[in-house]
View 1 (tube, rainbow, N blue to C red):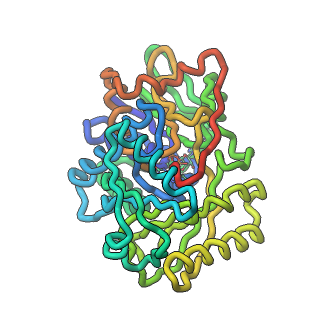
View 2 (view 1 turned 90 degrees about the vertical axis):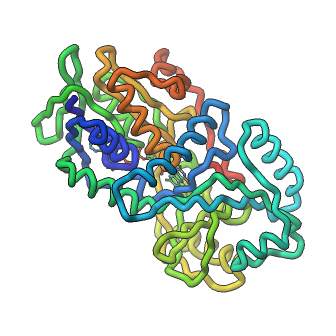
Length: 384
Ligand SMILES: Cc1cc2nc3c(=O)[nH]c(=O)nc-3n(C[C@H](O)[C@H](O)[C@H](O)COP(=O)(O)OP(=O)(O)OC[C@H]3O[C@@H](n4cnc5c(N)ncnc54)[C@H](O)[C@@H]3O)c2cc1C
């Protein structure tokens, strides 16, 4: 099978990789450059935490398992997966309710969670200044953080070794019939293949519409917390943080280069101001203050990125065939870092004719009547 993959973010690269694993020919098209979209500016916390309904939890849980297999089996010396778990902390006075709810939710799904007391927190993450008033935190041992830049580079390297050339070109529409799929490019030329994988994140809606299909992904022009996030990057610091910390004050996680990714829920609403340098500088200051409070030492912020998401309007993944001849397959989701390798593999299995029960609730056909139940983005104590 010859397949054109449009989009070189995590989802397109993972699908292209799985296609080559199974001996298929791949043409990879990207309008800007690899990881030009959400995939290079992601918090990349792999989790199934607080994810509902059960079918969405299940794919995210399976997504974490797939990452473990993927890291193990991928032909590379590099490590990008760090399965060190996540500490969820409510520093405020609603702590007991938060923990009770989150524990009940996790137990209901069979998702591992532990309560960790203050002394143990001080032992396992000694660089954090744990206040005496904090009696405990929740620990999710199955969760992980991902060095997404390393994963992206390795995917590209292996694809290149396997003869997949990355073509910088913009797709403007896709046509399919019973015998072929054709991608029309902005320079007026077109390429044909047996099938097409549409993995263009936030741009899916417009490219699908130009091809005659309805795929409701929130428009980046909206500038709300559904479509954007403010992601901070620290300078390299000597803080050997091991785990992800998700809290009501600040979310922070380590990186391979000594920097840390940071988010602060209470400033997220400022995405409404657009990509405005003055706002970004003010947010950097808030992030710096939160980190200083957390680590009891200054932590300089290198930059804050005005970061666009690919958010399906109803909050859940959209994955499956769009057309009747089953030649045009789309993959668009939030939580794409958690779901990337799993969706890549399942997409290829479906292109080969083997449907996945896991994906039943996430088909594009749920929007066939043109109606969408819009979801908001609940930011309290992390939902990525
Ligand atoms: C701030 C932030 C934090 C996040 N945190 C997490 C997290 O903690 N855990 C998690 O699992 N997920 C997280 N996510 C979500 C995750 O990063 C995304 O779901 C994922 O990166 C989406 O990947 P993608 O490949 O679909 O899209 P993208 O990475 O956006 O890639 C799409 C690509 O398609 C290209 N393209 C677009 N249009 C065309 C065209 N017409 N022709 C050719 N190419 C085209 C673009 O240039 C781009 O390179 C976060 C996202 C953000 C923004």
